[in-house]
Image (cartoon, rainbow, N blue to C red; front, side, top):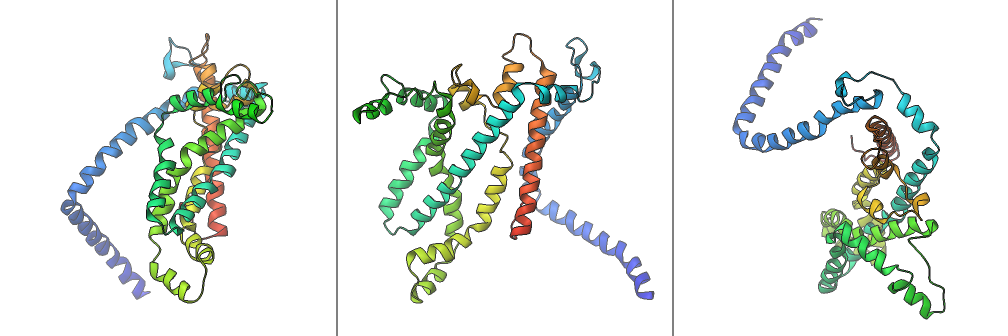
Length: 321
């Protein structure tokens, strides 16, 4: 009891000392805090202040009354979206494209990074890295233009190659069944090389002595990749997997909108393009309804990232928090 009382008396003194030490460190490293100040201000202004507009999702927005003056209508916009004929198509396309992209595209940068790390030919490794990185620097508009030219049914190089083997031309951009594959594999071609950078950085942190010891013990190159390299970058893989899983409902707008046309709309309409079509691209824009759809999308993404993070924490020891 006496010990508890003495601890209670000593605690404020210890807390005061900690505060003084913290203030002393902050004064000493004030340059670092000044550097931190600018991104924090940017984050508050451009990420947190706009959150006030989320209330539009629960209001019957009237331009003359503004965001704050418009009447509340609860979850009416959400119910309208859930009951609309577009709900199944839009959400289904978003999930299918995202899962396709995750399953097909996530392992490839890992495999390429492991292969590049294992090769002993420095010039070959540099050449492969250069060739695979380059597509990432092509702008989305240019890349979509290239895709449309390559897949053109009459003059496209792909259909010309199909014709050489006796096949019939395929209207890739006019057939809804081809849209998801064209979108996903063109994205993989553009980003796989760039995605290896993080894994190569993680592989560089593995001590060469471990590889030397394994080589002395008779381990082959493949065994070293499997038992040393892969476990060494496992935390990085899990972290990136959690981040990717958290954006399953967040397909980018620009590329998919540029590739979209009336013939493939059944397969290409996703949440981001649908929000655009009911708001800015509509002759009778409904900003409140679009905000509700965007909020629904964000909430699902947040639930997914929490779920995957929790699973990763239970299965392994790596998680975001």
